[in-house]
Length: 433
Ligand SMILES: *Cc1c(COP(=O)(O)O)cnc(C)c1O
Image 1 (tube, rainbow, N blue to C red):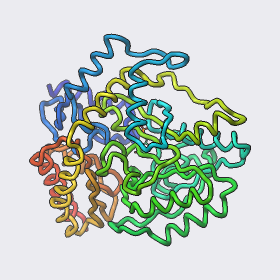
Image 2: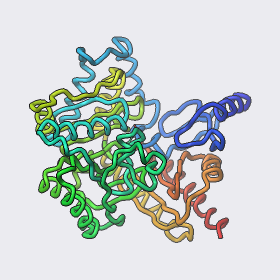
Image 3: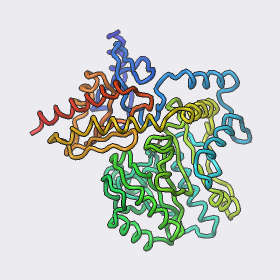
Image 4: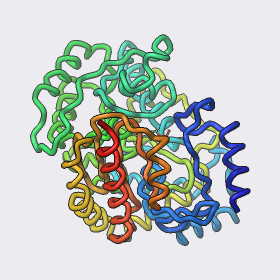
């Protein structure tokens, strides 16, 4: 067993890139043999309770019989066919479901193969919409700081300009507009200073702006920040007033994570274009989608450039669509809202104590997301193995220790995750000056 572990880790560390790592200074990796429910089993037999849902995705837990069955059944008829000129029931069923559960305005679906690609497609739709309307100069995007929209070049260009990769790639990236991010506290009103800055940029550049792109209510990988529904509502109003499109990136927040099926529901608004991904397949396969309104779809279709110029090889992969259909059925037939609320209450109760630790700057909880922001960047080389020793899987980054467990986690298991976090965060307090 331990031979197997060593062989995997040794080869891996010499040859495999992991997300955001250096091959010359690899961070520790832990070989997983299997995963079931909320438990990951490592190659040496140790079990870890999952606090991450494999990055917002595995909302029903791992190895779920209904999701397994959906893939097995689909496999027997076809695993893939090209989507150019062909269609199939899994894709049509999934598009119907997505149209049904999102805002009535959203009637058209583009299936992409990852979240980043869904964002690229959304940006293309927006620029092409204006080109078709005879306004090809409207090509820029307005967003807010601390955002994260993916790692491809179009998406990267709207990620936070400081903690994103703008410096390294500054000559290659499209130059977009960044308003200050709204303040990150539990307020119910909007941050007037942030809105003023946003409106100022919008007003001064409106002739060049195709769309606003923003993560609704929760900014994920750009800082795990939460902002008010009132701010989002104001952004929607300004987009309407100044006649620019609104792209909402719900790749992280979609499918219940913030307490509503989509975060935008809390602001009682609708986007012109919506990106979903991550939890779409319950964490089984890579699939994302870009939905848009008839205004956008017809605006493109009726215009001078009627063809939407995108078409991934694995577009609408039937296996991915089949498991997404099963995942949505599972979600909608489960008491997900109750589960998310219960997780929220438990995270508030159990994590609040961390506010008293000297290393901690802020503790915040929204839906099934708990965040502990530290004053200083953490040491992943120390912290990651420490979490594993304590029997939980939590993957911190930068100065953030955060959890977003599968919705099915039992209170006792969630307590083990929060206890480990309290333990590890308290140890930083003791070891740092
Ligand atoms: C993860 C994420 C993406 C990118 O999705 P990938 O599937 O990793 O390409 C885009 N936007 C948001 C908000 C995300 O959280």
